[in-house]
Amino acid sequence: MATSLQHLDSYDASNFIDISAKRFGLVVADWNRTLTEVLSNGAYETLLKHGAVAENIFRNTVPGTFELTLGAQLLAQHDEIDAVICLGVVIRGDTKHDDYINHAVAQGLTTVGLKFNKPVIFGVVTTNTLEQAQDRAGGKLGNKGTEAAVAAIQMLGF
Image 1 (cartoon, rainbow, N blue to C red):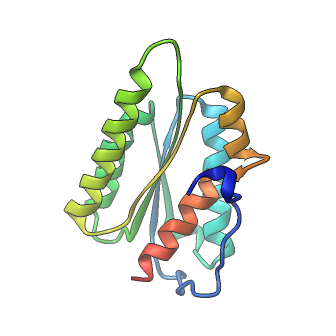
Image 2 (cartoon, helix red, strand yellow; image 1 turned 90 degrees about the vertical axis):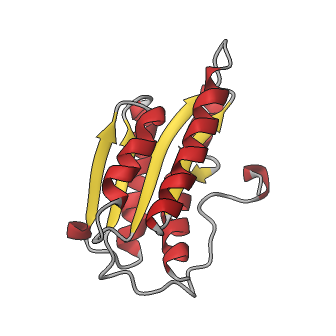
């Protein structure tokens, strides 16, 4: 659903499962760090808010969004990890490199989730401008990190 139609922090938690024994991996891109840290904090706080235990949340930092796929696979391969949340920011520049990165990461994360039969969440902000990215990383449209954590919790309920 388009972000303009739904605030990223709006969700119904009434049917969330107990996640107190679940283990989560966060993979966070270092590129655009000021924004990815906001996403990471949103995901982390959302997991805690809904019952996750801090000791059961593992974070790995990768150089950029393109590297999220391998970072996700390195966490997902462990049986004790129940879900992996991948967070990055790709802002369109003067070239089409963003299209290649976004497509590769989306396809790669899907493959990792299917390979390990667990939720691997695409929490990547893909925008045309820095302002749009800021709006989705704790700005007026909420926090994509929160949305990614909610998606992980919902997927564990299946």
